[in-house]
Image (tube, rainbow, N blue to C red; front, side, top):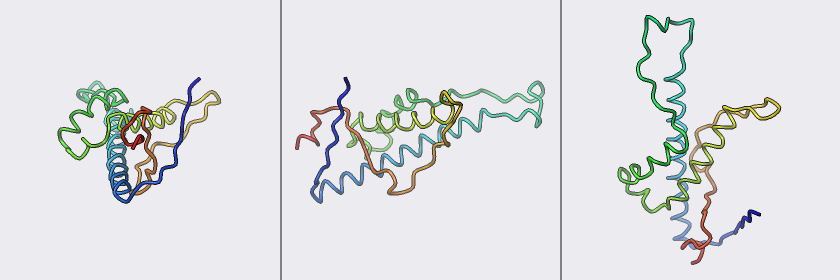
Length: 142
């Protein structure tokens, strides 16, 4: 049995600032992931009536940026952007899992053949939740 706990927190002003900063960074990372996947989709999509595949090579097709590819790039992201170092790795992975879940719902239909809409870019202030996968997290215990 999987047990989930949801806590309503009452943070101090300093914690509110930190959480808002984390949410903004996670929103940017989510949008970058959506952009990466849509860019891959546009580069690999080819309309057949536009040109012949025999006479016009399309070049090297890049690998699909899925969850595993994007979570492997988290270390590089933390090196390039030091502000991402204060966000825990599990929180960033959960953010990418959320993106991957919405991406799969768009590409793969369910049992009835219904598909959900394309994952959209999040506007500022629209990402309102983050999840910790460990119970003994320092932010929760304090």
